[in-house]
Picture: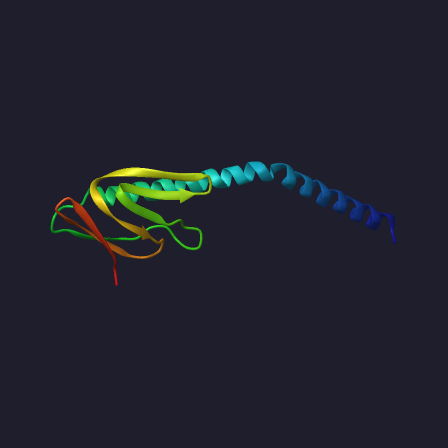
Length: 125
């Protein structure tokens, strides 16, 4: 085997080892960044749902959906809160009106309306 081929193979081997070491060294930071990004995305989803529900007026029916599969998180409506659970915990945003105790799935269309001081929510067929 020519010396240039052996040198090239050694060079590629060293490159692959160095690449694997770099990925191993950065894995914790990449995982943290991914988690922070997911948390921020979930917060924006909860904020959007809260805004939709707080903007309801009697006689108005609003159709909405949120998130996307496969990585979207479910949202719970409970009391006066929109609650999203993510990897490290959960957060809740308060709403103006009473909410039904229901879990909303991502990528599903829902209808919401206001009856007195209570919000009604159902899956939009």
